[in-house]
Length: 159
Image 1: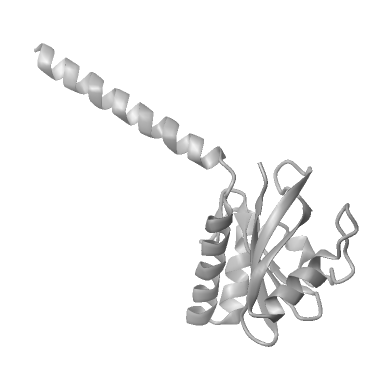
Image 2: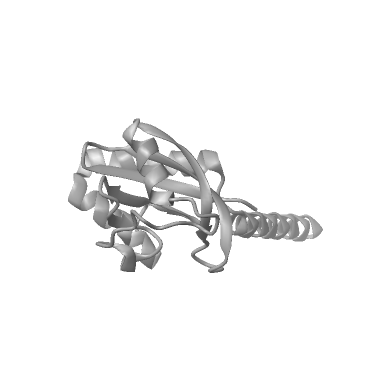
């Protein structure tokens, strides 16, 4: 029956297109609106589950686990002294103070991010190492104050 073969071929072709579209999406870098949405998702998770569980979920993303990871988008969390309390791309940073860290242009990245978070929320542009390529890229990060002790953020790398 030629009808069945044509239908099967059409379905196979459609499935192939979905796979290609899905893999192309996975390779696309995250966007600024997606970064902000991931911060809001993390804040809701922390509010619902508590700080310890939220910080553990953020850091689980460094092992490509958990729900707070989307392609090259990951959450980072700091206290207001500039110490990393959770990091979704590099768990070796947890416990370290990055308060005095500067990007390649001499910008005090954590100080600026912390200042924006201190106002409640905001965007900061800087340069940062991409977790996969290890190359320095321009990045725009959205930060959000959780409470007087904690702020979180997520940045989108420029293409």
